Length: 462
Image (cartoon, rainbow, N blue to C red; front, side):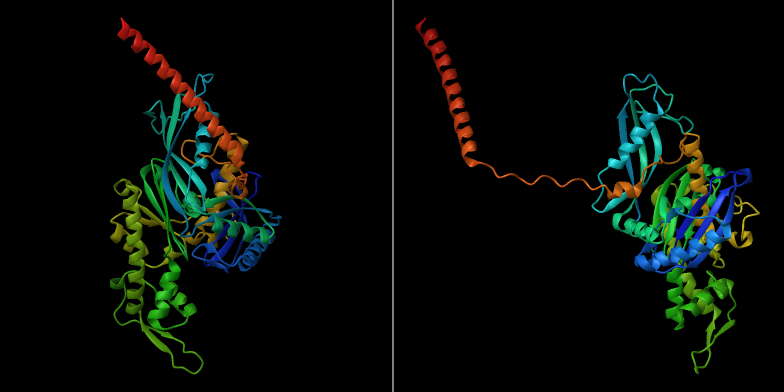
């Protein structure tokens, strides 16, 4: 078992969870401490109220710290929210003449140059994932890494993930207000994929769909490489709100109905089953047909799955997902959601649980074997891989993953110096200079004219 202790902090819309873990046996993660609290100050994965979010973070961290019996001062944070965007990019770099073969520093320079890419105002780069390398315009196969190849120019295609700089700062402020430092930030679907996918999934082609409270996060892999990422602003809370409004009940009652009696398929429930909801104060109980509840859930969930299907097709890998779709997150616990997803996307679907990567003697093992904890456990795995890679002086998944070592928040705080203020111009010297230049031009022109006149005059005389 490794001794490096990693802390993952999942700041979600409905919950904030903290995970303290170390490397266990068979490359699994052993969770030493776990803390969870209701999320406050967060909407659609974005911190809105820094103080409320910081208080919730502190409660979750204190609980995990006490259970693990360790002091926590640094955390790996998952980020999501509808402000997250992705885009393709491309870059190239010349190989120095003294490099007989391409070296790691050449690859690092190429990836590092991508962080200087011009972005829309207010955007910051979160991840850069290499897609395809080229040496002297010849594409390398996925099994050939550029280091050690002879060439003069190294080029690559990249998948770039960006986020709103202000929203990223709010996460930083909330974490720091809770008395913590950010060790690194990870896009939540990337973290979740660490917990519920394996190498065979990524190689075969798979769409990982994390349905949380505020957002649905998508990450598509093919041939071991992350190819497409997306964050949808619809998830479990939207379903709960539909039930609340459609049945005219309290939000807590709507959430309870969704979890206990909800179904994503109307045809899977009985026509006559009725649920009795206690009335408020002296009001009579309300009766809701299970079929009505299923109809409400089906409408919203189908809309989410249709958007997921659109993103899969948009990625261009819709027909290459041999491993199908993997659903995870709290929303994956909805009854029959796997069947609905399979119907909408016409793709094999399964529920992703972090059982393959979680050590059985972890604390709260039975509770953690739930899709809603995939992101937190994935953050610990990501942190462990990064720490181990740095120790071995090799980037984690160098052939497949991004170049790490980019300090998002440090670079974010480095603002370029303001341009110097324009100095007043002395008009008189400028005017003199223009006059002098004009006289020189006229003098030169006259000399040229005299020369040609002389030539022509001599020619006429002859």
